Image 1 (spheres, helix red, strand yellow):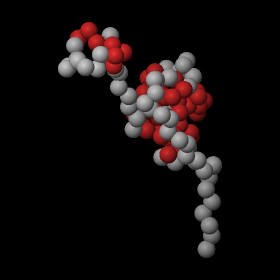
Image 2 (cartoon, one colour; image 1 turned 180 degrees about the vertical axis):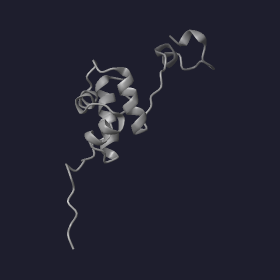
Image 3 (cartoon, helix red, strand yellow; image 1 turned 90 degrees about the horizontal axis):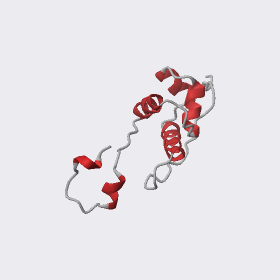
Length: 105
């Protein structure tokens, strides 16, 4: 009986960042990397599935702010990640009973 050889490298899981902290490109990059590695997907797996170049995916996972938002959103959707937009004013005045039109920009 032969042992099946794994092609490529084994994916090592990384830790999800603290998502309660203020948003930063680095935090988003860490979350994307943690989700991908937690799913045991390689960079090649994701880049091929989404028809993105591997260098673009690497830039996303490094927090490069020059990557197109559409590509970041594509990767997030594929990995099952999403985020919400919350007005700073809404979080400062969290005692309001509902959202008003002036909270969205």
